[in-house]
Image 1 (cartoon, helix red, strand yellow):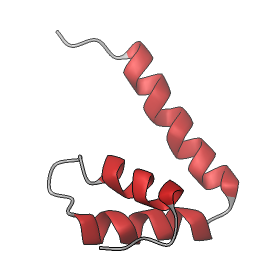
Image 2 (image 1 turned 180 degrees about the vertical axis):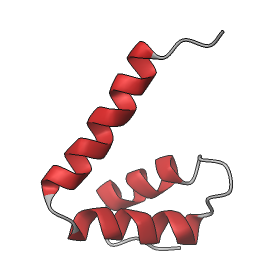
Image 3 (image 1 turned 60 degrees about the vertical axis):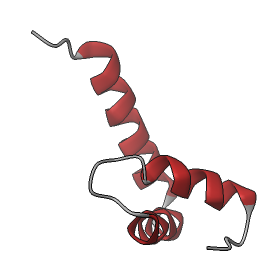
Length: 58
C-alpha cells in the first residue's frame, strides 16, 4: 500500500504490530487519530507510557 507520507507509513507500521490489527485497520486508526484533537492523541500516548512505566507483571 502506498501511504501519503513517511510519517503516516511509520505510524501505520507501528500500530499494525498490535495483535489482530492489519495494515488497513492500522491506517484507519492512524487517520482517526489525525482527525481528533491533539489532546486526544496526547492522552492516549500518555496513558500508554504511564502504563508501561508503572505496571509490573506479577
